Image (cartoon, rainbow, N blue to C red; front, top):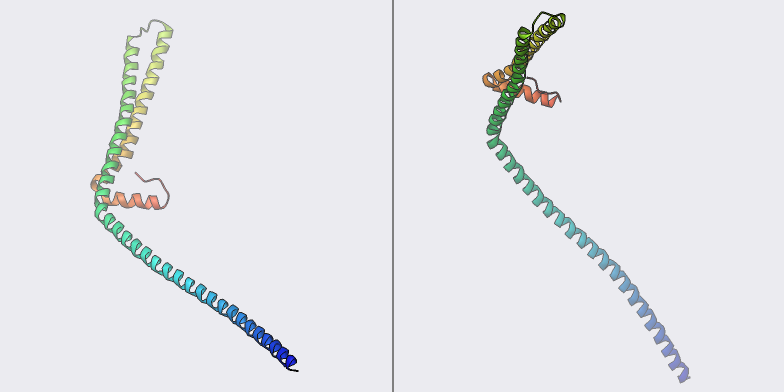
Length: 186
């Protein structure tokens, strides 16, 4: 019987030991789950803290850059406006020169037609027709030259006058036209 008691004691010891090991494994699994969840939470907190710090740095850098840009614009705007007005004035002068030269070329061509007409002999009918043709074209060229000169002076001359006499009005009109998507008035 002593044998049976020893066998029973050994068997119970194995069963108790197995249950103890099972409880240890279950506890280890539960502890691992808790540890992983805690680590994930800590990682998320660290990531969010890093994002918060980085966004604060981005905000302060952008705030500083905007301040510097504002200071630059405030400092340079008067000079830019003066240069813009000067350029628009030079542009008008250039166009006046171009269209004025074209008008002058038309007047000179009309004068040349007039001198050709005087040189032509009016003895034959064909010479008379050439003279009449030259006279008609002389007046057409003169009228075109005068019309171009008037349009040129009206268009570019008025712009030059506005820039010289009322530069703020010119700037305001230019900006309003640019905002409305229209070509700038002259």
